[in-house]
Length: 406
Image (cartoon, rainbow, N blue to C red; front, side):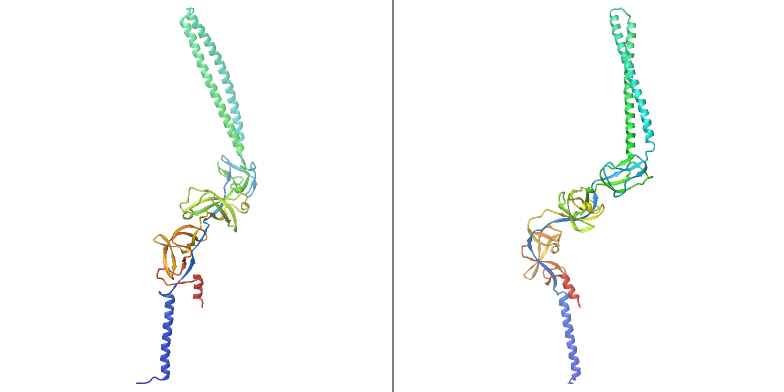
């Protein structure tokens, strides 16, 4: 047998040592990141406490009371005296329309009413004359009836008198109808004159209430139709927030709930408010419910916000009784049922739980399935099984940063 020289022996030993080191490194990597590697988990201890449930939503500031100021008939805008941002009082002149021929139509209507009044007086005179003639004919008819009964006049003479009475009755009825018709004509003409008077008054567009002008829809010289707005104004003390809430998270949304409102312009300031109304009609497209949130009386938010500003709203629901509380992140669902991974004697076990109320901080009540002091998994690197090898860490992110650091 030939003996190896010292250099050859050393080289062979070096190769063996390198192979062992490589195998050791592969084993370490396999244990740390392979199928047998421990899964890092973050755990917490189940404790009893109270939570404050709530509903979160976003919305825009709108005015509860607003007015569109415009004419009641088509016409041309003569002047606009108010501008956007002006504070006006009830009765202030905001704009004026061109009256065109209203004055002439009122004069014509007054002349027609005078003629109708004369016709009414004439009808009254005709009625009095017909009434007198009817009474005279009635007297003559009665007298001739008595004479005919005593055979002092002939039957034909009596018939003449009775015919005169019937004719007088018919003339009286005609005069009565003429009087009624003349009265109706006068009433119609008067109503037409009053309507023209209101149209003349409506050419002066007055502020219906105290408020602020928010938009100017037409300028002098523009032609507008009946009902079209020339100016829009709102009551600045009636601002509220139109809030939208996902239907799946709107349980408990009712009028009267206290609200905290954070305006987009002042995100760090919470203004107080209350749910004034919940709309019966939800938005079927966005799958949201709509609620109107009014600011607390005297809130300075009314002077610090403007219409259309975005806002975030947090509603406070009634606080439930104390119960066991766990992070919402620890809840896992299997086959539609909620549960958690509990650690007992260094082993994992899946426990079904019955849940209660949830707050906006990510805490949820556990009504059944756990007891105070239980240790449960909140976060894990991978999906867990009952035979999963695990390692408890403070935070997954911190461990990941250390493992990737050079």
